Amino acid sequence: MKAAMTTQAGDPEVIEIQEVATPKATPGQVLIRVKAFGLNRSELFTRRGDSPGVVFPRIQGIECVGVVQEDPSNTYAKGQQVAAIMGGMGRFFDGGYAEFTLAPLEIVFPFQSSLSWEVLGAIPEMFQTVSGSLNQALEIKKGETLLIRGGTSSIGMLSCQLAKSQGLTVVSTTRNPDKKQALHDNGADHVVLDTGTVRDQVREIYPGGVNKVLELIGTATLKDSLKCIAPKGVVCMTGILGNEWTMKEFTPMGDIPSLGRLTVYMGESKNLSKELLQEFIEEVEKGAIRLNIDKVFRLDEVPDAHRYMEANRAKGKVVAIT
Ligand SMILES: NC(=O)c1ccc[n+]([C@@H]2O[C@H](COP(=O)([O-])OP(=O)(O)OC[C@H]3O[C@@H](n4cnc5c(N)ncnc54)[C@H](OP(=O)(O)O)[C@@H]3O)[C@@H](O)[C@H]2O)c1
Image 1 (cartoon, rainbow, N blue to C red):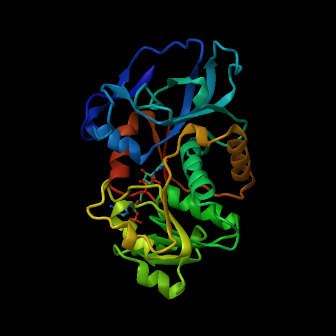
Image 2: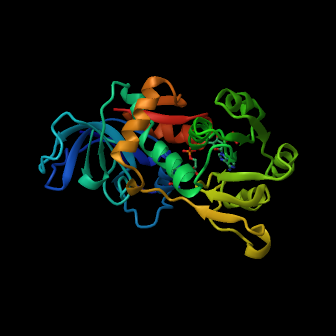
């Protein structure tokens, strides 16, 4: 089979398109004929050698969609449409950047859909992250206000649509004035230009603060996001677009406003269910949710897809088809 193999830690050039042996499924594993996969920021960290415990060479890819080729446990029939996500995929065992991948049964989710593979490829990890952050971590409710920090990211764009569909008012941020209209077109009620601080602009719109913040930039802006919340407001850090993992100084009694709450979301396949995934796919089929797919690459263009993501040129999800 053809695979995009990360041969060692480094720049996108370390990903080589190679012919490798197609793996064989043993009981408990499903061999998936990969049709498409979303590309994820965490895969850039892994490629650079920043994911602890990852050994190269490795076929990366923390998610994929495709059809069952072989399932020795007979849980799924050959040809069943499936998604596979996380659980060490593309990090501790070979992942989705290939024509075939082997996934443990517990990270395989069956679905039925007539959507194109490139659209389906955008869904699993993005939906799991957004749904888990909004519904499980932030526990959003109709009528609330939500600030999305890092609004033009694929996670930010889908979060805005899901929050709007659940009856929230959304403030979304970008650092780039040219992307403001895209945020409005995606449904944001207010768009704020992020210069590193947005507190004053947010307080101008909502003097009492917002109920919830989805923090996708991370520690670089977290303290400022905490300044945006109303009493008992919640900030959930889900992303680390700012590339700073550790906070230099943090004073809990001071940086977190009194009664404010800070949480994080680190999604896993266990945060997704096949029912939730199927429901979401049907929302996309009906046109109730519009996925922002920015660019579709081919499997042999995965190094270019990594360069594209690293250059922050995307205004939505980057996908590859095999
Ligand atoms: N916790 C989880 O389970 C989980 C799962 C999946 C993803 N994530 C995280 O969620 C975040 C979003 O992922 P994604 O794939 O949706 O990202 P993405 O689509 O690649 O995001 C791209 C956008 O991020 C913004 N950005 C890039 N670098 C930045 C910086 N240094 N400071 C501020 N903004 C920056 C840029 O927006 P502007 O130019 O418009 O400002 C850029 O257009 C990532 O940190 C990812 O690792 C977390």
